[in-house]
Image (cartoon, rainbow, N blue to C red; front, side, top):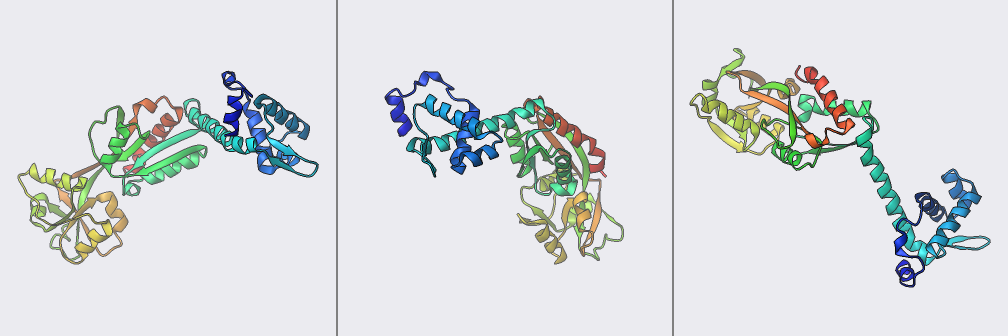
Length: 315
């Protein structure tokens, strides 16, 4: 390349390290993009003479002309063409450093990577994230949606700062907060024999044809609750369906489904009935926070914001 050839013939020594200043690169990129000193000067809020001086200094330090000048036009030389993408990359990296370091010094800036599970909106977690973003517009969010186990693994691997999930248990290097205490309810077709009573005993539930999402945390909760009472669930359908398809099975009379009561609230208008279970099958929600990121003021601010909303989330 042109710059490599310059290095080879000693046009500028490598030992100089950071031989140019960042503002000179900014000036160079501005002139290269506009191919006009006057327009570039307006863009970076500098005088045209000052801009020209800095470009000349940069060319002197590099030992090469970056622009071909004539009375009516300005164009990049071969060296300038090669330097331009490198200069843009350097300036972008510097901007990225500034953004990442902001998290260590400011509670109002920074970047947060937060994990959520499908269905997080039913428990108010999406509204919580939106509320925090609206109150802190300069904080950038990276929202990752995945199943709870994957979120926990991502948190343990330091792939995110915080995550919401519905599976209890310790996570290495993370602080765990209990946010919501919920319970499962049975979704039945209208006219079900227990509909007027409003609840179903666990032993009665064991006799019902049950539809479950295979391998889901809810199916695990059901199995655990029944095993404690020496009961076996009567599973007639194992599926990987959405709530819509599960509820469709119920409406068709194929069986019953269990969902969190807070999820059921969103579907009360549908032609379905929701019955409590006795004794209750708990369904809890948590937030995990990576301990290694707690030194970031913006992370502490986020944790405080979420915990302050805990009573609202539990309503």
